[in-house]
Length: 127
Ligand code: THU
Image (cartoon, protein in one colour):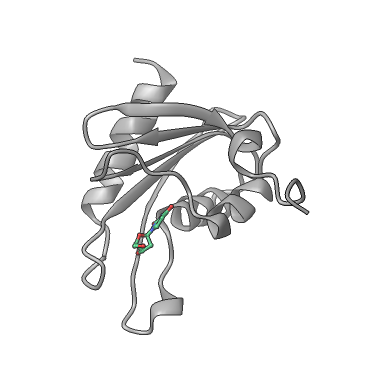
């Protein structure tokens, strides 16, 4: 099984446990680190909206808690045509990634796009 397939399965499993009673939009994420370790996360919402956390943040927290710090690939999955990380999450990913870090955007059936962090995160390009 390819790393992309492993990421897809892990993110989909994590998505099942998402706590999203306010938006009803469950999201899963999975990270492969440069050391070959896998971590998953899901969104965890809160009745106080800003207290909620995205799936990517959960996966990053799990990675950091285990002592890993470099993202090689990250996959995000939701029940929509194709999901890309929000701006806040791109900033969080960038802290532990580089321009070539792979971001897979998936729906419940398949990976729809394979992008790099550089494709999605160019904070100074519009200034
Ligand atoms: N969400 C994520 O978990 N990741 C994203 O990349 C986009 C949005 C969550 C946040 C909130 O719980 C729900 O999706 C609706 O925005």
